[in-house]
Image 1 (tube, rainbow, N blue to C red):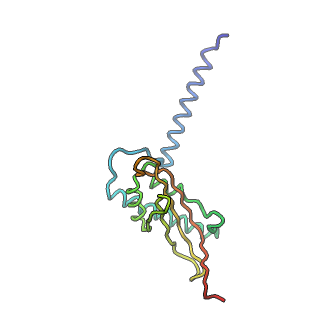
Image 2 (tube, helix red, strand yellow):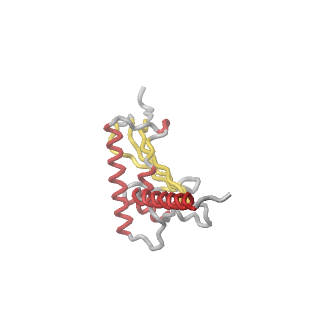
Length: 165
């Protein structure tokens, strides 16, 4: 049985259109392609400042709508925001520099992940506060030097006070 050439040409054009659409969507969302050239200190600082501004804006919006979840309820996922400024395949040193430029404390966890926990403005005295938690998983390569995955949440943290009776 012979297949007419016209439908095959149509399918080829459709596939080419879908690929172009996917690539343009990645470019529009800021998906970063892996870079071969080193990132400058100024660029890392700028990324950190932009990350901080976008996290602060998201946090304000969540507080205004009274929709900040507790950590027990999973928190509010802001991983996509952090990934815009620290894409996968970024070196862990650059990721650390970006988080520090944003004003966030950075430390290692016991599983080899890089962890940042930061208190956000707001809260009610010592009863509760708001936090940003960023967990960066390194790629399982020989030297564990690049970012594989990022998980970031904003959440309300309730503080137990032993003196309250």
